[in-house]
Image (cartoon, rainbow, N blue to C red; front, side):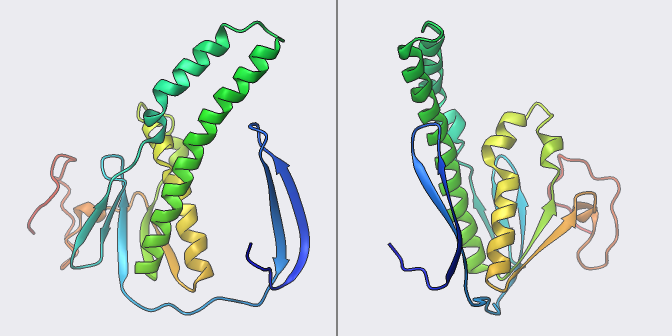
Length: 202
């Protein structure tokens, strides 16, 4: 384990539903913030392509991994087995833990992917511009399962604290700002656009 170079303030031990123990250590250390320099990139979050990055010259896309759908069959089988167990029985208690392990696997897969993705984006871009999404609103639509599975809000949070810690900056643009309808040269607003039009010439 890596040595902690700082004064330990508190240690919080927690136990998960799958009987795993974790210790969260809070300690004081020197300010490690460094001023990052480099390009400014805008990222567009979606469900077909989780992240589309544009740095003013080139585009790059990263697809979502959809962990809930990946483990849906395993989860369904274990939940069906749970429903057949008698209430209060030891078999039911053991099956509850088996179901919890699948949920844990889904959550860990999503977290691992989002941490690696946010790390890559922060390493390559000291300033990131992103749309201020209303994830709670999107979670009330028919796309709720896909939105929550993608972890859009979680990704923005990860980008925010990692950029702040390393001297970068996350800029959130109002979701109602008509960026698609504006010409990037003369700022003319084209109100005739609909969602089916992805490119247009001013």
